[in-house]
Image 1 (cartoon, rainbow, N blue to C red):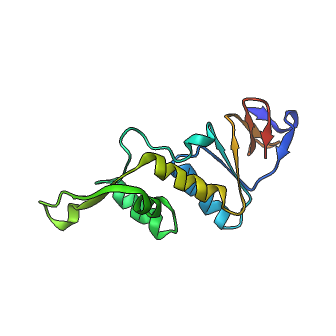
Image 2 (cartoon, rainbow, N blue to C red):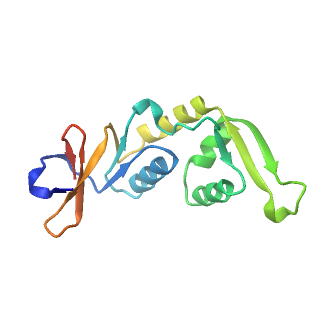
Image 3 (cartoon, rainbow, N blue to C red):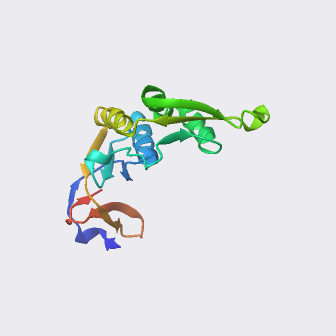
Length: 154
């Protein structure tokens, strides 16, 4: 970790989110929508919200989380609804308590739609970079991040 006085900050933000997967996108959007000046750092601008080889939203555990994020104004459920190839109710032979909705999405379309949403969100800045270090203030509190190329964001 680096002490505050040894890093020159390029820009200052209220919130810095590292990683632009599902959680990173949702965290950055929530922060920006609350009026916080937000930075979203990602390894690759072309891989924002990129899904793994099994591009599913939902299932026995993730559907509960998706519903909760949706209830809080998140985008994962909305984007899945716009980009799904197939939807199924899992465990339908059992009782309703264990039913779970799962959507198989078009991974390229899903990523493109989510990228468009985060790119057009007010108060949200996206940078392609690798956060390599936390920058600490005088009392040991985190005051920013330093990137691979030595750029600091506060």
